[in-house]
Amino acid sequence: VSGKNGDLYFGHFKGFTKVNTTTHKTNTSPPIVSVTETSILSKDQKKQINVIHNNHIEVQPDHYTIEINFAALDYTRPEKLSFAYMLEGFDLDWKYIDKNESAIYTNLDHGKYTFKVKAANEVGIWNEEGASLDITVKPGFLETTLAKFLMLLLLSLFIYLAIKLYTNRIQERNKALKKYNDSLNKEIEERNKIEKTLQTTNEELKRSNSELEQFAYIASHDLQEPLRITGSFIDLLEKRYTDVLDDNAFKYIDFAKGGIGRMGLLIKNLLTFSKVGGTVLDFSEASLKHIVEEKLLDLARLIKNKNVTIDIGTLPTIVCEKNQMAMLFYNLINNAIKFNENPKPVVNISAQNSFDKDFYSFYVSDNGIGIDEQHQEKIFEIFKRLHDKDAYEGTGIGLALCKKIVTRHGGKIWVESKPDKGTTFYFTISKNLSNLNQVLPELPTKQLLKA
Image 1 (cartoon, one colour):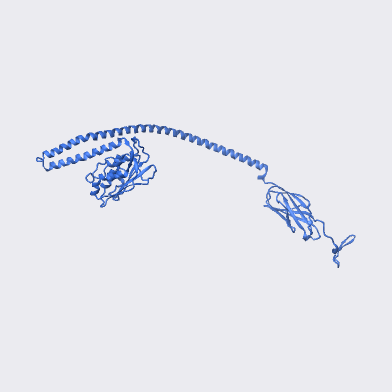
Image 2: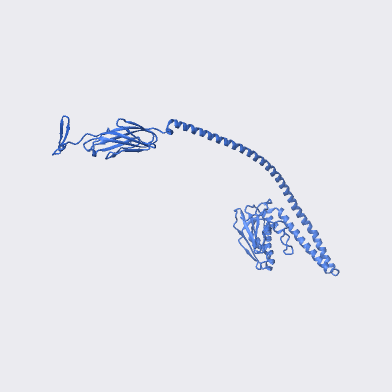
């Protein structure tokens, strides 16, 4: 009961006690703290545990949340009480609060924890001893020693089966590889036999070609004499029997002389072709510009008669066989002029940037009649003609001769052309020809496509 002067009266069985609030001293007694209740929320239900008389609880592994309630006994000014708590094994330091609130922890790992709480009275005197609660979070099945042992056992079994499967696959692969190697070795043996046969055939072919070239040389050389004798007797027949022969006879004589002339040219070209194939090459430095200019002098009358414009680009000095290089340019320029019906014939001769650093690259182009694509692979064959001899003179040896010369200089020759759009002959010459006298081997004759 409160009195007039602020005194407080407390009754008891012996009477009453009077408290004078104006003379009351500061409260020096810390409050008594206790953990009152714990709520555990799992996926099945929320479980509440009264822990006033229990300082230890166990929590199942399927818990989601643990809520811990606590209280302090102090009647002086309970609204001024302060609290601090921590969960050893989880919190690193105390958590201070100004009012009584629950401590909530979510998804704690399995293990042992100690929850501690302390309180302070209205003047800040703490009960450092406080209260504590031991909490054990049980491990789930997968976290138990038995589960770990079973998992280790299963993992070991899996690794064993994986190694076994991998070993079996390796063994099967080795068997397949051995079978393949045996087949490959057998194929290699077959190929070696074929290569030996091809090598023998190639040697025989080279010898045959050499003999054929020698025969062509001898035959063409020996044929010249009887051809000259035949021509001489026909000339003699024409002179001595002028008064006896009629016009038909003279016509026949002209036919015979024309045939002898063409035959002589054919034999001469065949002889040149044979010489190119068998001559020992004497490589030396030569100015291609000078070589081309000399060959243009040989073609001066034809150039003048057809009013041809010759455009000479950059031509380097290279290592080559001078005479054969002169024949190469002569035949290509002669063809560019001969097979040109354009009112203003133009022939371009120049070097170009090579697609291979080991080769020089050149071209001779014209604006003439062109070559149909279906014939472009055949024009380098010997005696191959695309036109009647009455339309264009020639023996069909010129381009075959060009190809042989380029091949013996370690290069390739090919053509790009369209009918009535002109023709361009491209060819390459090796930069690695030495100055030694030598005979280069025949290279593959397949036409090289422009890179």
